Amino acid sequence: MKRLKITGIIGDPIRHSLSPVMQNAAFQKAGLPFVYVPFHVRPRELGHFLRQAASWKDLAGLNVTIPHKEAVLKYVTDLSPEAKAIGAVNTLVFSSKGVIQGHNTDAPGYLASLREETKFSPRGKTIVVLGAGGAARAILYILAYSGVSRLIVVNRTPGKAQVLVREFQRRFGKTRFEASRLERNRLRTILPQADLLVNTTSVGLNQTRFSQLPLDALNKKAIVSDLVYRPLLTPLLKDAKRRGNRIHPGFGMLLHQGVLSFRRWTKKRPDVAVMRKALLDALKRS
Ligand code: ATR
Image 1 (tube, rainbow, N blue to C red):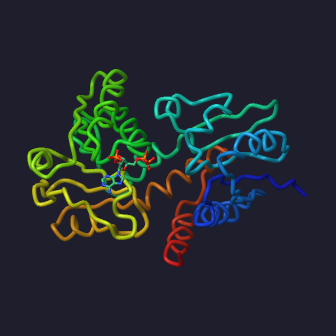
Image 2 (image 1 turned 180 degrees about the vertical axis):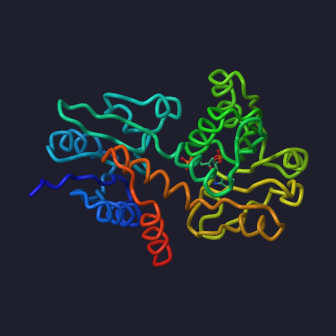
């Protein structure tokens, strides 16, 4: 019998992660001798855990979630260019000789999902990104990389948007970056120009809504995308749908980052439909 390969996810908290259900369903469908386990790792335990884990002969890889996506960088021996630019790793690949690769599948997972569900092509477009934190960095990177012409970063704390915009402008000369405060009047002039509006903040969790977002100013043809996947349809997405805008829920990014992690660990393509169903069932139960 083949030895079981171990994969899993590290985070704090970790109990609510939907990845074990999704990945185990995919391994089972593919008939692969892999298992995916949630590991509760607190910040002070991260170094110790990773040093131990690197010595497990059967460990193939790990996903990394909140709050370790940035902290894990210093334990990685081979960092992918996208993870380096984003400054966050969500997928580790372990190989013999102590090599720990760090990848970011959140960013390409977002794009894969956006393309699959909406057929949106970022090249030449104007995109408004709400938020300037870690999740925004992944989205800005993949959109600029895909040839977007204008990226407007809108944040409650405008200074953070400005810092981010300056950094990305240095990296991507062909995209024009702008920063704005999250404020109703400013957004009235910005939103009509957007082909895509993306929420990367946590607003939407627990049914919360933006108070300073005049959605009625948005072009009817614009797509509204939300990274929040709990609830499946956030108040922002419901409002956008009601207005007749096309929407892109956060569920798809969660699915496709998992698809890309599976491919990194197994070198095989998973059954995406099986993963989608496992994830949706788990989300509806939770
Ligand atoms: P993540 O890694 O998930 O992006 P983060 O780095 O803490 O988390 O960033 C959170 C983002 O959500 C920030 O842009 C934050 O705005 P501030 O920079 O002003 O803090 C934004 N955010 C969180 N709660 C918000 C709220 N209630 N309204 C508007 N923006 C909010």
